[in-house]
Image (cartoon, rainbow, N blue to C red; front, side):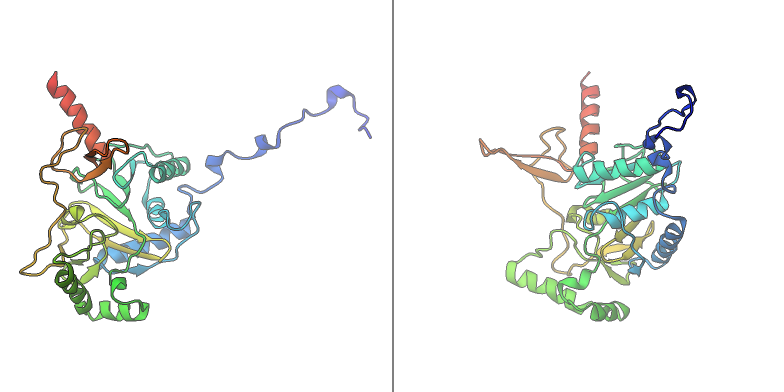
Length: 305
């Protein structure tokens, strides 16, 4: 059946995709709706006001699977603004799959510039590391947290752990560490080392290595922690006292890299990853913080000229 109009008068056929708004304009700024951002910001302010205390929030569905950083991503999207510069690291690396995908997504829904330079970033989302370069008062560090409850090692009941926090009853955690020393002559907690924040709350600092725990104490940046699956936010404001649990006769200590150095930049004072060559079996070490390592290599090249 024809319309009876001459062919010259027929409207040109168009692709349905042309009628759709661009991807950038299909969502509100930073993906989350304004109501969700307001709620997350309110809960974040409460967490900042009570350092180390876990605050419940309504975790939203995100376009990544739970366990891949949905909590950190929600905090990042609730806080980021057009003037921010974003850096994302995973285990210290800027170019891992997790970090690259999160960076691409956030840039797509915000248009903010990305960087690998720690000093240039205003907002850093991280998984399992704190950058080696010192952070300043203008910076936010958002941690992806898989398990926020530090007492989960010693108490499976959520109701009981809440009561233990309310009463500041952390004797079972002290006992756990003491039994570790008796059995192994060492505290075997390598990551998620429990810390006391502001002399009040026991806190899980997310699975950062012991090497990074001292950086939390009286830091200049604001540290924010968010667990999407567990629906918890907690924070360490700038210049807050953070103390790892230790005994008078058994002090807290970090990983020992004495006698080792980075194979790429020669650093002897950074957290090192061990690399084993499958063919020769040779063990070498490289900096976990790739941006820090690349910066040292550039400085070494300029210094040798």
